[in-house]
Every structure is written in C-alpha cells, then in structure tokens.
Length: 192
Image 1 (cartoon, rainbow, N blue to C red):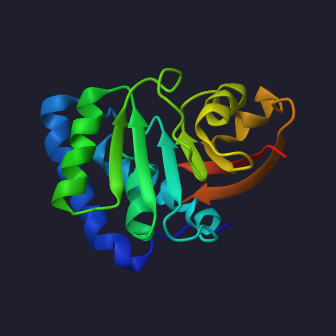
Image 2 (image 1 turned 90 degrees about the vertical axis):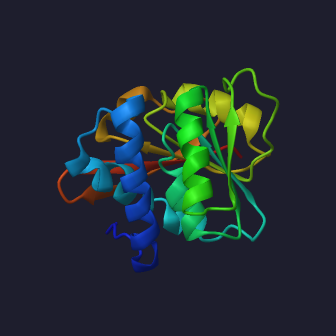
Image 3 (image 1 turned 90 degrees about the horizontal axis):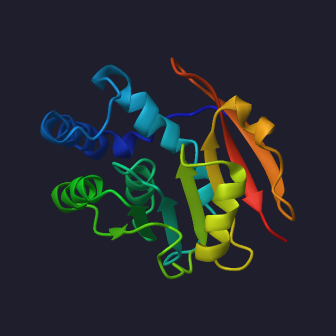
C-alpha cells in the first residue's frame, strides 16, 4: 500500500504541526523530534483513509487513546462529513486537541476525556488506535465502544503477529511502508 498525504490536507496539517511545536515547548506533549512528526503522526494516519472511504456521512468514528490527535485530526480533515471523536485520559493532550479543532478549524472533531473502561459506550461505527495496547486489549475496548459488527483498525508494527488472534475475531493485516520510519501494518479487526 502506497501512503501519500492528500494535497488538500497539506495546509491544515502544516498548521497542526506548528501548533504541536508551540504547545510541546510548554506542555511536553510528545518526545518525537520535529523532523519525524509529519511522517510519524500524519503520513502514518493517512494509511487509514482508504478503509474509512466506505463510511456513510454522519457515521461516528472513534480514535481510542488519541493523544495529540493522531490519527483523529487526519481522519476528521479528510472526512468532514463524519463525526470524529478523539478519546484519551490525558487532560493536557485533549486541551491541545480542542485548540487544534478550534484554530484550524475542524468542526467535526470532538474530544472525550476518560479511561476507556470507565466511559459509557460510544456507539461508534468505525474505530482506530495507534500504539495503545495489544490486540486483546483493543478488542476488549472496542467491544464496549463499537456498534455490533463495526470494524476496528489498529496501527501496528510488524511484530503485531506475536500478539495472537483475539478469540472470535478475524484479523487481516494490510502492510505498508513509511519513507523513513519503515514498515507498518494496519490490522483490520472484525467480529462476525
């Protein structure tokens, strides 16, 4: 799978990176050096766009453990017709994400503060997470927050296969490569 940042997202995502740089100096949001943020946070998130394409307008998309908004920001900008929820337990990261949504602006991006196991069901139609937990943990959270039969897409490294297949779930890997950061996999999880 070839990963490219859509041209129409270049300007708003550049603004996102400038905001992240400014906030990071004061709030220590990420340890990623500025030189790799575009690829690691934005280009990596772009790998999900083809899987999001079939979602109908108005669908609810959830980014579990969104942190500074990767991949939520990319998804919300690419699909302004969807409701995108960035969920995280970190207040300072969600404060940053709310500022991003206000300044860029991204009106279809909302934040939800809380621990995934404590929040009421988000009744999502489509879900994702990046670097959040094992496949077993992810399907546990997704069972709580996704609608019956809703797909979940985990952004993982190639070592995801050592985690095993969660009982009752189908796992389909979709490998891709980032120009400098190497090989990655979108792991598609479905519960029949």
